[in-house]
Image 1 (cartoon, helix red, strand yellow):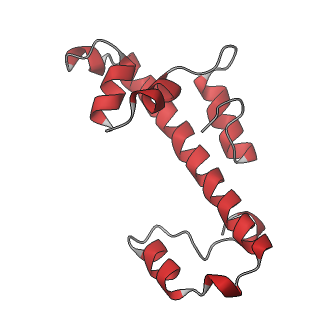
Image 2: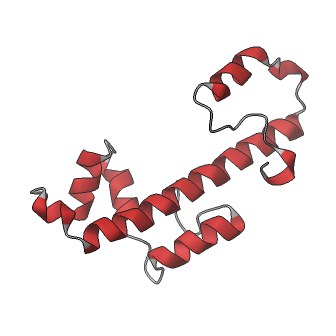
Length: 118
């Protein structure tokens, strides 16, 4: 169950989100509920991105991009994860004064990414 009881849209079961979205009459859902679901979705995205950042830090520590022939971790992440270069750069270079581990903790504690415009 997600924050504020929002669980009906998110599931680890593949296809569940699409099934729910196709069967629910969005006109019957309150605006407040829609906003709650949007916020809960963004919190999940922030947690996923923070986890990706931690994993990329370990990938970099192991020097995998170099062994794969990439010039930088950002280049490797963009190619390997099929990301836009801007997204890869945000994942591999935290804002000044922030560490990856701090961003990861913040995303899990508060459900959002501080200082990063996603």
